[in-house]
Length: 201
Length: 245
Length: 82
Picture 1 (spheres, each protein chain N blue to C red):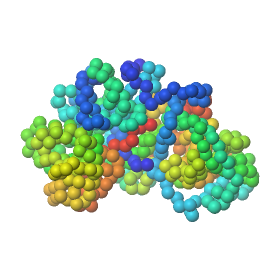
Picture 2: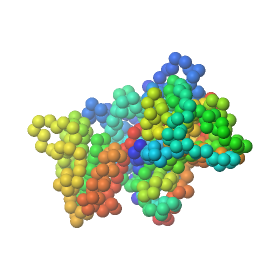
Picture 3: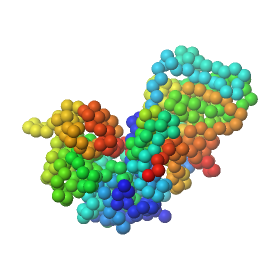
């Protein structure tokens, strides 16, 4: 058992409403930047968002087409597996429901893929019914590249590694195929309320 | 080259805090007496682990500021505003406290006399810490190997160990990138090819060059060295980053 | 996001391999570029540490801490025998 460091608490501060903080998390006021690699810089003229894989017909939107889609503003709490949570974050984006609406598929899973090669896996159930967006604004401003701009996935009910930065598309799959962090030992589902950080949790 | 590390798993051990010395408004040196220190080579680092009462842990790496054979193991910590670990180490820690650490770690970024020279050290900001160990080690030897330091910091107040470095006997050059005091006789401005050409031995002398500091500083300095003709194989780099998550 | 280098994962690698690995040399499995582990580009502001080849950017090594155990995947890095 490691020795306790007298007087050490770290950055953690007590929170007014502890019921909003999943087990093992602490609330932060800043917005840490985490990444598995360099920040991509895809020009908007080259950007597209695609839905393909186990679908009858794939779909794709250019930046102009994408940002012309009906979008909504949401305020959500986000929870990173590295233990920080940030409350009341505001985003603007296109709901996944709108993107999936005309997609004909029997697939139950998606692999989300991003510029730079990052991937993560999700059940369709976890991105449908108002649970996910492709967000391109944060705090009322265009999403900064270090936070995933021009657009990132936003799936706030799961650990934030599932909210893939620099998102470019979804590939629908029959089976649940582990993405980047999942293949190195992180949990396939990632529910912060069940503390599903690692495989087997 | 495994340095002075005992082969086998690193073990966490407890170190008693002996003394705290404020180097600059942002930096404090912690003198420690570890329970079972195997010795180290100049340039190596330790991992420090803090544990809160509820079991919450945070861990960071710190370069060893003391030379092998110094009277205590010394670490110099720069306070990062709203940091997780550094405010505790720089402000809260008291003599008599126990600090958990493991080390020494690293066999790449080390210098000992048998590696030869001329020895050229290029430091940016807190990158000076492992070079204090290297220069103290150098000063304790026969000094037959020429040793030179180029140390870049923002202002005079940001230079860590300024007095001590000047007194070790190596050829020490400073450059300030923000305002310099009146009468400043050191260099001014960021390290660039012109300054490297002026300060570093020519490539034909094959200096052994160590570069340490923030990533951006190291990238620029290392590129400048290569651009001015130095062999990449004679350049060793250690990049400090934002503290871990 | 600027990368640090293999020195940042030296302690974890030592823990895993039982010896210092910073001077160990290897080749990127993707492009063949050779490097010492200390020279790799490391992104450690993340759920784990990701080491990438400086020549092609491919992932060569991933270090994670799972329930107190250090896991190292170096399938992307062909270590040379010393």
